[in-house]
Structure formats: structure tokens, C-alpha cells
Length: 224
Image (tube, rainbow, N blue to C red):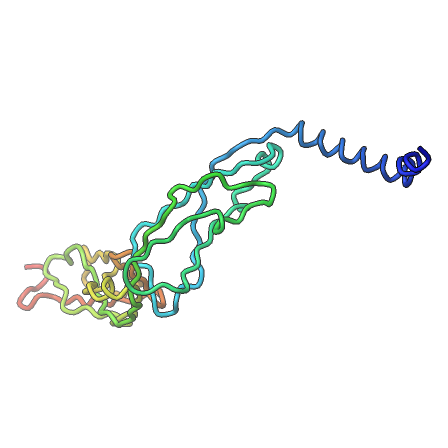
């Protein structure tokens, strides 16, 4: 009996504190029910080889369903959850990636229940960079008796970059519309260049200057 009594009362204060802590922890958990929430999160791509481009037009977001204490769910911010894919081993062509809980970064108190879609298929292509002629887009008609004699662009070309097949298919870069309606003299316009393929980008997107030379039609005097 003495040994049992000594065992019970040995470090009695510490044992009492531990008991209260255990009860308190149980109480906190018991009063904080488990909730579940779906979040649409962007997919972040890391480690893409330097010579590759993603050639897939539309990359969907992933819906991540999370489960955990209601207090954590209610305080969740969109920036608290993200999904990362390692693409360091990618090569030209198609590749399928599994989206699992290992790729999701979320607060430690939450668990990943489901990811939709569970897989992502992407197409990769070798990166191509090349020079492309700029074509000015002139609209309207000069004043009666005048005509556009010459159009120049400075710089005359731009450098574009993107997936090889997409870049190779682009013929020209077109400027925004330049209206010469009713004009009788040369004019310079500062405008932008537009690429119709969203997968192809300008290496250095800068304004360009378009000079439109307008002259009187030969044999025409004062519009007669």
C-alpha cells in the first residue's frame, strides 16, 4: 500500500496539471466540429526546363476539398492553399501529371479530402524565338484628291517567343488600327503591336511608330 501511495502522490502537482491540460485539450477539440470546404486554387508550375514551353491553351484551376476544425476553415484565406507541380523532367510532347495531396500546401490542421481533377495532361514544345515583320493596319481614306503613298514602321520588326509550332505559324504582327480619314499631310502615330496567338508573346513589348506619307493625287488640283 505504501508503494501504491508513493506512486500516486509522486509528482502529484505535475500529474494534476497534466490531467487538466488533457481535459482542456479534449474540451477544445470536442467543441470545435469538423468542417469541409472546396477551394478553387491555381496550379503553380516549378522547374520547367529552360528550353521548353507549355503549349496547352487552357490550363484549369484545381478544386481542392479540405477538411478540418471549423475555426480553421472559417479563417482560411485563398493564399493559404496552393498546388505545386514539379516539371523538371518534362520533355516535348504530352505528359500526364497526378494531382495528389503531396502537391497541395495547406495549413497543417487541415487534410486534403479530394482534388478535382485528379490528373492534368499538358503538352510541351521546344521554345522558339524569331524575328517577325510588323504590318501596320491602316483604315479610312485621306481627303478627296489625296492618297497614302508610303507607310513605314519603326522598328520594322519585333522578336517573338513561344512554343515552336505556334511561333512558326505566325506570319506577321499587326498594329492597332491607324485612321487616316480626311488627312492631307504626312502623320506619325505611336501604337502597339498585337499577336493573334495568345501562346506567342513579344520578347520586348514596346510601342512602335508608324509614319504615313500622304500625297496629292497627280493631276488633281484643289480637289478638281
